Image: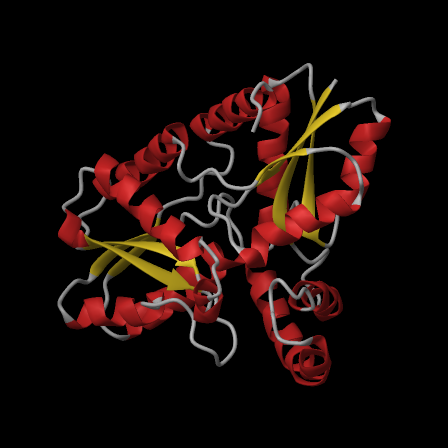
Length: 313
């Protein structure tokens, strides 16, 4: 029997300071996320970052929390259910890199349920050390044989699905600018060989080729900077304020890094960046909805995993 594990980042169990602190300790304690030496970073994390950041992040999670739970978990489950419905002969589960359900527990569950061929799909379109590498490491640590799909931004069917999502949103407004905003990473990781920036550039170019939007109205930017070190630029927030200064007061943001709605799309972009944009003279700031369980995205996942199952990659 075939098994499929869809892996997203993760979320606190509840939007309380206690649970957010537990989640952040696991997330920010991952050396693929913060690459500083443990002896140097752990005292900073436990002594300064967690006490200061946990309660603040908890208030953000409280703003976005759904009746059913964390948006990231809720929408990942919807994707999982939709893929399962399209693959009735498979066992399809979801897992999170941080918090629950864990990659280890879900892979063991698939194995116990009789799956002798298991595919792990990272729900991050591009590969980067701070997300994909940890998924691969956790999967391999189980010693359960799996086939890993570690990126999918370059597939035409995915690009078509996301481009149509963007175009539909663009056509509903009278926008001056489209920002294609990726989750940032520290700039030094690219210097050390991380392919993420190159893949973001290729992703953006593939989208441009599919969109009926003038190229001079499209700009690639990065968001979600953490810490004092330089991250990939240009930063979304700065670019929004620059756009307003140039008279571009109606802006649309597409966030390809996030296939589900989450803290970064709802709170960071649609609340914090929206407030800064409006306070500085902007008029309309809208966000392209995440793909979530869009039928075209579900069809893409189903076709991709079936194709990979029969390939020698």
